[in-house]
Length: 616
Image (cartoon, rainbow, N blue to C red; front, side, top):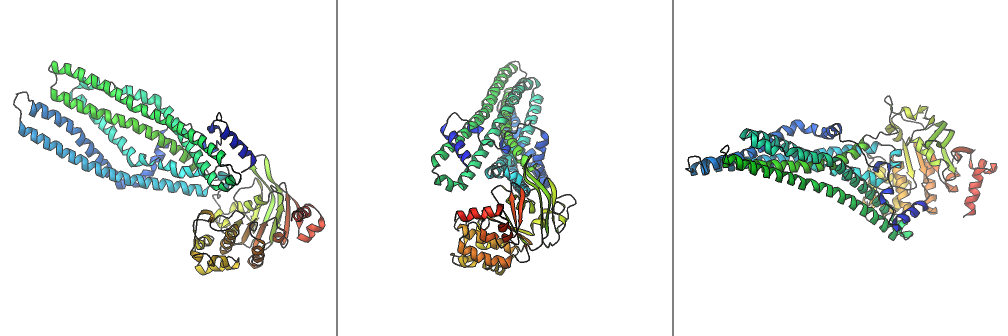
């Protein structure tokens, strides 16, 4: 964490007037302000298609069956009142009442069974859809280029795969089918009301436009408020990820209080956004209830007049009351469902924003696999920019023969790491070309290129799992004997055998139980197990003690034989035996030659060596 970010964070922590939402506004976290469109909606529900033929017909059958039985009960209730309890002839009929009661109970049983099966299979479809969507999103993220991750913190990416996908779960498991049920139920009730008595039916239905007018006015505000909630939750996740990974720096500089204040501000801002969105959400229920109350007043007022005039009987009014009650319930659910849909659409927009992101480095349509290489590498007037107008490499021209070891040296920011990133095609160059054995790396498939290159970084990443699995990550098909042979070659076998379970010892994320030097030895073993034709060491021995480095140097003499290698290092012992040393400065090659030649030249390289000895 640099001083600028620490200072700015302290200002946010200590100044209550600073809005947290004005800080850390990452490109992917800005509000996505797009109109609701059915095209994106259908894109989301395209994930249901693979399961449509299997389960949807049965679910629809259960839905229709449950809806019909539910709509039939109020009619039976009205018929029981008018024909069995208070018939026109004045003679109640218990037999008819018992028969209609048994019929109603039978319909309730059918409705219960239909709903139970419908819920079961909609949940099955919902879970499968979420599984597919999460898998597609993760797979797509795996294919994205380094430039994508350069612009986004890990926590921001994480929230898309977890929170945003999870927020769609209710929509797929219950929401979609419930919408269809409520729509069918509403249509059925309207038809029945108009058939029973069209005058009373029209009077009640007149209140419906009021509800749609209210929902239309509120939907844009609600949608944007839920987007803001998602955005701020994403920022919290990003900050948590940064804080956990940087906890040592935070504690070393005693910045815990400032960090907590900063988090409290973010947390408060998220809570306020949630409160606002939730308050808007809660407005739907009372408004629908008020509209329903207005409908009930119209029903009983006008219905009483029709009873008095003899146009309808009491049973008809009771049936109407039941239907109207069932009428407002689905409208209320649809209002809540619309809110749920807005939340889901806000998440889906963020998900599909990532899904629509195309890798900046990708295979050409006619790309061919790179055959087994010797390792001749050539940079032909290569120009590269991380940002437009700010070249990191300026016309690099370099020829490397197969089996040569090339040391890249220079001050920080001179372009050393950029060169090795371009060899693996983590980025694409602006102009010029990079060839391996005469093949332009842009004309071959990325997988065939990277499968013949191994990289050992200074900041070694150790995955959760066993020591054996971490080494085998270099070549998943390697046998236990090959894993141990690679470990012995880099002198990692000795410390591994001293661990509680040897090669089967479990290590946590990033290998926290191992020292920095031990983690780097494992990365050496992992890289060598892959048997690459090109080996890249980016400050790979920076965290290894002198004794261990001496052993590794002996191993490297054998292991680098026959392989083209690029070594980025500041230690003289690491680079002095390289076949060729390239001195970089501000993206340009200033000097080339062997260690002795460059020392005699007395240029930039000699200055770097003298500076190193000066601080020993």
